[in-house]
Length: 201
Image (tube, rainbow, N blue to C red; front, side, top):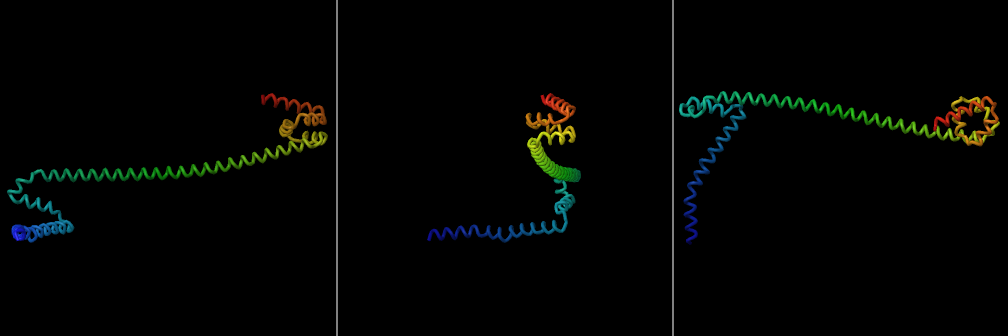
C-alpha cells in the first residue's frame, strides 16, 4: 500500500510538467522548425528578414553591430574568391586529366611499336638462321663435289661469295679446288683468303 501511494504522488507531481512539455513546448518547436523549412524552400532568407526586423526595433538594433553589412559583403567576396579558386582547380584537374590520357595513348603506341619491332627482329633472326642453314648446306655441297667441278663454279661466282665459301671449306678440300684453278685465279683467291685471315686476327 505504501508503495502505491508513493507512485501516485510521483505521477501527480510530474504530470503537469509533462502536460506542459507535450502540449505546449514540443508543438511550438515543431511549428517553428516547419515554418523555417517552408520559408527556406520558398526562397526567403529568414535570418536576413529577422535582421531587418531587428534593426527597426530600437532595443534589438543596439545589439546587432552596425558593420554587419560590411561583414556580409566581405563574406560574399570571400565566397566568390573561393568559388573562383575552385573553378581554377577544376580547370587544372581537367588539363592534367587530358595530359594523363595523352601520355597513356602515347605509351600504348610505344608498346604497339615495340611489339612490331620485336616481331621484325624475330623474323630477321629466323631469316638469318635459314640463311646460315642454306650457307652450311652450300658448303657441304662444295665439299662433296669433285675439285674439278667445284673450281669453275667458284671462278664464275662473285668474288666475295666465292671467297666466303672458300674460307669455310675444309683445308684439304680447299687445296684440291685451288689446284684445279688457273694459276692466276688460284693466286688471287689465296691472296684474298690470307688477307681475310689477317683481318680476323
